[in-house]
Length: 286
Image 1: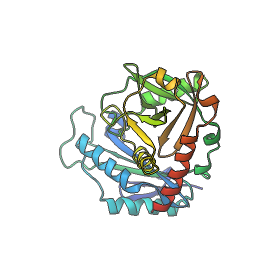
Image 2: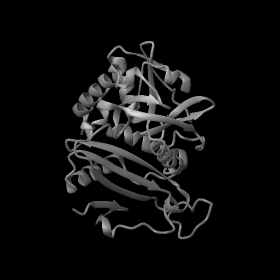
Image 3: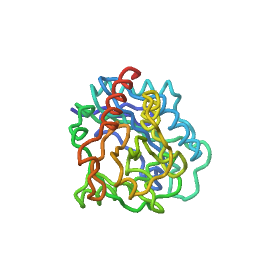
Image 4: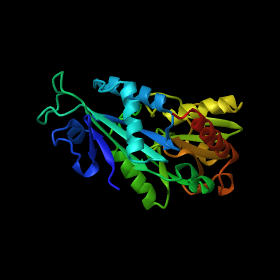
């Protein structure tokens, strides 16, 4: 089945969709993106993703191409037109096509480029890896200093994922000054002494929408949370660990740099939080 995609107000078969070679997203990675998960044909955490999108656009000085209502309408149409039960909706907004290549931003009035498409992921919430856990390796964090902006500058995270796979791991946690920042495409957590520990929000990490929801649910469940930095050694000595992201939800980590955690099996906190997140997110999905 050929997907229907959205490009600058047009609904097109994917093989007919195109973006200019002069688009700054292509030439400069000058753009931002969001990924919204779909379960049972409904959108998860949609409002949170739209708020973060607005923040990312504002931080880069890119004009807002659509209202939240228009974004919602477009998401729902893509889900319906592509018969997505479980999956993802990807959106990307770039600074647009100035008509030529230049380091300077284009003059005001250049419209942003908007691209949207779906990815079908049947059984997204039933990923068997949730029962076996992830093996993580650590790598230096050499990304730019504004990781709080969800930009399309994803080359190093992609390289880190490939290096992790080359080492026989599922993913990598990135490390700066001895402390874990985050995963290649997820937020990182450990559980130690009965407390859930995750790095505090700053420019150093992405302000995860799933992170915010999971921490809210954890507090409602009377779990102890410490928002602070932790070292690789502390992570290896932890009782358990996990990640969160829009597509993985809550995913246990069972090994870090070859050191097993909790006997090498998913821990009870991660499994319970995954259960709570999926249950509550389904209730509020739109």
